[in-house]
Amino acid sequence: MTSTQKNALALALLMLLLGVTLGAAYLDLGVLHTPAAMLIGLVKAALIVMVFMRLRPAGPLVMLAFAVGLFWLLIMFTLTLGDYFTRA
Image 1 (tube, rainbow, N blue to C red):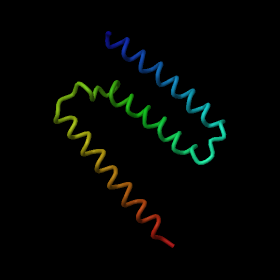
Image 2: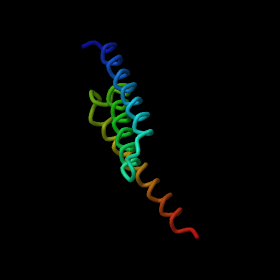
Image 3: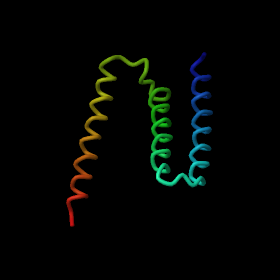
Image 4: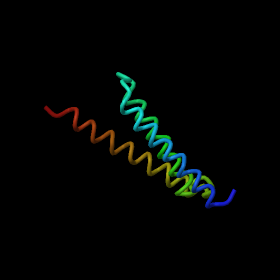
């Protein structure tokens, strides 16, 4: 499979997931609405990272930098939410 074919397949999958997101927005899922939207968004983000950013064939140093970046983002979200929830 050529690079152009991989990009076209990824684009088609992203458009399909966009339709799934739109369909899920109109369904009455109750408490599962937010987790479903987050799961769909996570799949989209993983697809973009693996295909368009070419993280899969990258070396271990690039993977380590990506993991450290995600860890730092988690720390920042945790600190922000901790500040938000402790305010009056």
